Amino acid sequence: SAVSSAWTPKIGEESVEAWIIFFVVLVALLVLDTFYLAPEQGTSISTSTRRVYMHCLIWVFLGLLFNVLVWVLMGPDLGLAWLNGYILEYLLSMDNLFIFIATFRTFGTPEDAKYKALFLGILGA
Image 1 (spheres, rainbow, N blue to C red):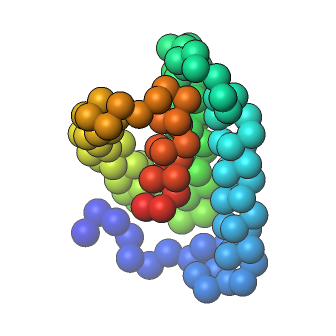
Image 2 (tube, rainbow, N blue to C red):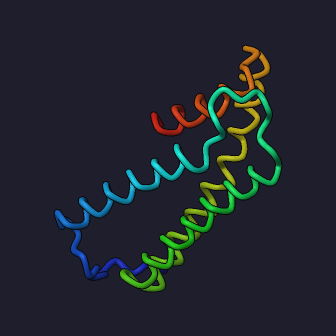
């Protein structure tokens, strides 16, 4: 196998500290998304293309930053495996966009409610 099965993370596989760090980072990212990246509630103006690109770039950057962490803590084999999985999941998520568009058009979802629907759907997944 190209992926090394014997790796020793610096934090530890079942470390309480690792779980605490995970949940703190998760909450911080949810706050970032909810209060900074989300469009203002009640606005009927559609989100600008620039804002959508910036939103996407921020999340891709954070994913790649995490990949660097995996690479450093677990080695290049697992770092590359994580990167391949990230790229594959990103590409597979593209088909969901067509489902979202079809669903929103079918039910006539107002523009200002789409972000909240997507956010709650992703959070629930």
